[in-house]
Length: 116
Length: 241
Image (cartoon, rainbow over all chains, first blue to last red; front, side):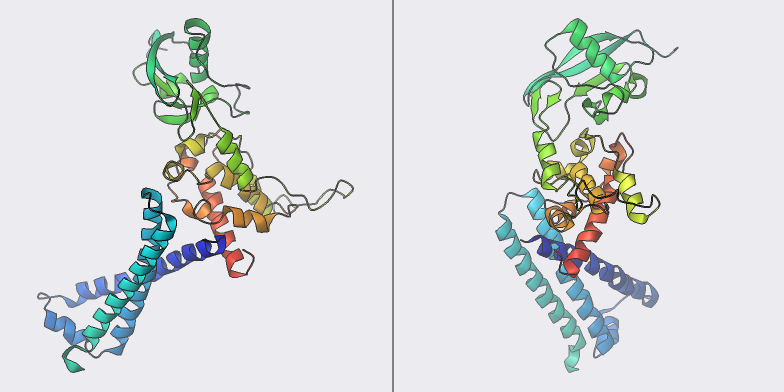
């Protein structure tokens, strides 16, 4: 991979980390704020179902995870395993697609839960 | 000194990459350095011991070794500061092939400085007047902060990323590149930034900061590498990488 591509990957990981710092804190804060007498699935669905704001929020969350995780995984595999670099690149890209696909499906599923 | 035992128990690595520690009794002296101890072993106890030194005053960067598990410049390391219960364990530097005993092959270490484009690339010839650079300009100050490297290899031997990824250029080479990135007289930055970017370059650094912790000159290669990360990102975003 070219020096430019490596540098942009590094930048993407740092920027996605900044996004994650915020979007991880929001659900944790919400849990602490909202959970007073136990947390039920119904309560969660009641909050996020049909709410475009939460859908957009989790859409960004998933995007940040799908960028951040695979780049880190790629680095770990390159440093710690003898797997060829090209294969690691392909595996990391596939992992990114998997994270994005399953994550967005989950977010959209909660949004549309109950047919909303 | 009241706490000073009369003899030191000194274990010294003998052999190459395969070898063993051999124990030598060395008289304890006042103001004794680790290099004094190694020299005593070589001159009085076993003349076949191989080690490297030159200036003895912390300028040349020849005498670095692993002392009780930590890479140090031995000529400026007092025994009193590092001996534990009168014991010293002296080994060659890590991350470099051992030639014999305490002498390591530093060829790759210096080759990496060249690969990081650590040579000055002048933009003027000898007929040009002196470049005028304000001592307090930000670039001059950044170059100053990193310039005093003596090439001892302590940072390189202390870096876990070098251990994991033998292609990694390492703290010393990247620190050198950073001084040139900040040298207003230098014209080689495009190639230099391309050379130091990527998985064998500055982006591989995990910021463990062992280099900064161990550098006998109290330089901060981690900070230099962070500067290279910023410089390469800027170059990549502006189409100069």
